[in-house]
Each structure stands twice: as structure tokens, then as C-alpha cells.
Picture 1 (tube, one colour):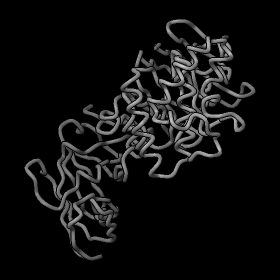
Picture 2 (tube, helix red, strand yellow):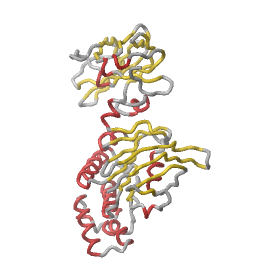
Picture 3 (cartoon, one colour):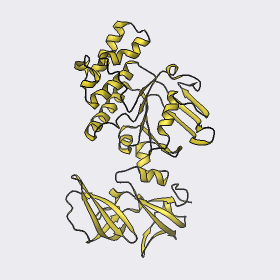
Picture 4 (cartoon, helix red, strand yellow):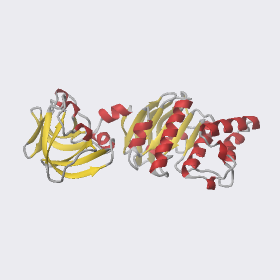
Length: 358
């Protein structure tokens, strides 16, 4: 296991097109860190720079306290699992998993022991003499992960390893990867565009946008205390309701006479801002902490089995509320939404940063 440190890491092409803009972060030894963001945000580029598959244009990358900028991938003691499984089709599973060890001239007894132990860990020991074409997508990904584990590297790098799997297999493999981390205690950096994967797997999440680090924190902090409007809108399913408003005298004007009193930690700002509230913080029933109300009209009902999503027209805005599966109503009916002012968020309308007391 090893720690990773990025110091003002930058990447540009031809010296003109910046891709990564001076990122600083530290991955602690044994930590599971997820890079998450939309397509094109630079997360895979950042991972490939850690691996040595992409050169950096500036800054330093340290693994286990040593600068590795000039080291080739094979000298960084990392193992990488890609979106495509990259298995040798003509080799058995055993041969695929043992390939890296044999390149290093590992004694055969040690090869047999390591592959056997990892195959048992991944529950594929009964498949070792099969070829990749005989396996499902989930089984192939297990082999690719197993090939990385048998090398016993300092760092594991995962580049969207579950993207090619269907929803059920993704859920199963996500749980498998989390169990593996708990058992191995390995340092893992994992790239995904799926914020659910990020929230469920990570010790800490690095949210990227346009090559910039927007927030690097625990899943709980990223979800409940987003540092920017982009982070608030990217996390959550459905994401946070974001409402353009006018703030004056401690109140947010949402249009058509709809006003909400802001809590003390959001006062001191004025002008056009963006107000945020999570769908699960909007309820149909009063609760002790719900000191605010919004009157609206139901425009859409989306039953999801365990819960129901309601789209409610409030003034000039549509808000999504997450309510219980037992909701019964019809489009057009009047509704009262209850919410707690302490659960409101406020973002600068110009740069998107989260606002607190001035």
C-alpha cells in the first residue's frame, strides 16, 4: 500500500489546450478515492497520468513519497483495471491472471499460490481452465481485477471498470469491489461518471469539472455540504432542486410572490443567487424541523416502487419532491410542501460557489 500525492498537476496538449488545471490532492495509504464527473471533465486523464500512461505538463506526482514524473508505468508499482477487460482470448483464466507474475519471473510455486488465493477470493476458482469467451461480462471483469490483485501492487487504479455491465451486474460488482477493499486494505483510485458508484464506494470523492477540482471530501460532505452549484446538481438521484432567486433582507424571492426566509448561516447576501433544496427534504406532512412551507400544484407523478417522485409547480419554478410509495394524487391538485430552512443551500449565481454567512 502507498499514498499518492498530486502537486499542481497540469495537462495541456500542444501547450495550448489545457485539460487539467493545477490539481492538488492526497490519497492516503489504504484509502479508496473516487474521481467523478461528467464526460470530458479530465478524470480518466488524471488517472492515466498517475499510471504513467500520459505525460504531465506541469507539477509533480508522488507515490509512496517519491516523485514518479519520469518513471514509466512498469516502474511505478501500480495495477490498472480498464473499462474493457483486456484479457488474452487464447489464454485460460489462470494464464491471464498469472501472466504478469511470469513476466517478473516469479517462481512457479508462488504463481500457483497467488492465483489460487485470489481466484478463491473472487469465487472463480472453478473457472480457471476456461477461456474468456466462455464467461459473462461480470466474470471477465472479476478475472481482470484478479489479474491486478495477484501482482500485489502499491496502488490499484480502476478506469470505469463497470461501464460495460448491465445494471444488475454493476450493482453486484460494485459490492464485490467494496468487499475487496475491506479485505485487502489497498490504496485504490477509481474513475467513474456514475455518482451512485462514487457515493457508495468512496472514502473520499474528488468531483471534477472541466479539468478543475470542484470538491474533495467525504461522500457525506459532498452530498450534504456541496462546495459549488455544480457539485450540488451532479450528486443525488434526482439531483438537488436549484432555483434562481433574488435575495434581499434575509429572504429569497422565487417569483410570483413566493418568498422563503433564509436561515442565519445564509443571510448577509443580496442580489440574484441560486437557492438549493434536496428532493428528500421536501415533505407533504409537517415535521418538527420544517419551519417553511411552499404552496404549489402537482404536475407530474413518477412511481418508482419504493418511493414516488413528484414534480410540483411553485411560482415560476418546478421542484421535485421524493415522497413515500403510498402517495395517491392526480395531476393538477394543490399541494403544500414542508421544508426546513436549515436544509437550504445558497450558491453564487455568477461563479457557482456555495455561500455562507458574510
